[in-house]
View 1 (cartoon, protein in one colour):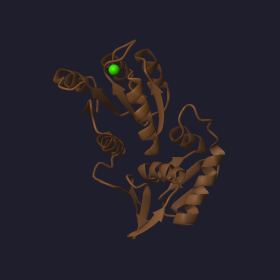
View 2 (cartoon, rainbow, N blue to C red):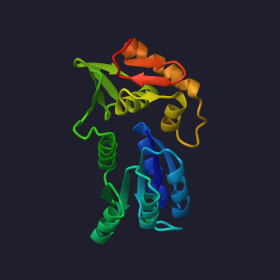
View 3 (tube, rainbow, N blue to C red):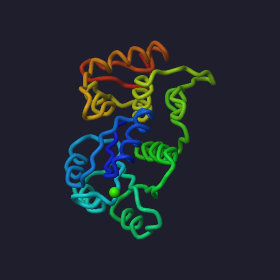
Length: 222
Ligand code: CA
């Protein structure tokens, strides 16, 4: 999953880019509201974390412009402590959730996971489940029938994306766009390698190849 972080506090942003990266998210970071308006609307983000106090254009206006332009990406706003007015204005402007600074990184992680599941219509799943697999996003491992199967970081990222999009046909370039940040060179052949690794660990039928179209996870198999 690919996230946009808009935050002008550099030490905080640095820390969040690090922790979100370790949690398997591809993160693009911006510090200015003007850049955020453009990039948030033009890149295919799965979720946006938006600070409200920003240089350039304030976060509330950024959010208002995104929503007015039809952007439906989930947005979690970061607000100042004790500012209930800011939270209310943020929710009115189209935020999906908020966190008050300072916050514990684990709370941000859990809210992001919940928002991503909700956006995919999977709000009823406290843990991701699909095709007989249970994904533990905290431990970055998957289990089937109570047995843990270890994953590399890249396999975990790919499997999480598949499990959030079961039975959809996903092209290699689409997957690359959602698994790598804007700084990384996107080589969609790498996706093929990781898909093969997942098949070796989880069984061939778990990811089906649709010739000329892409991959489909969790279908009937053959
Ligand atoms: Ca700020």
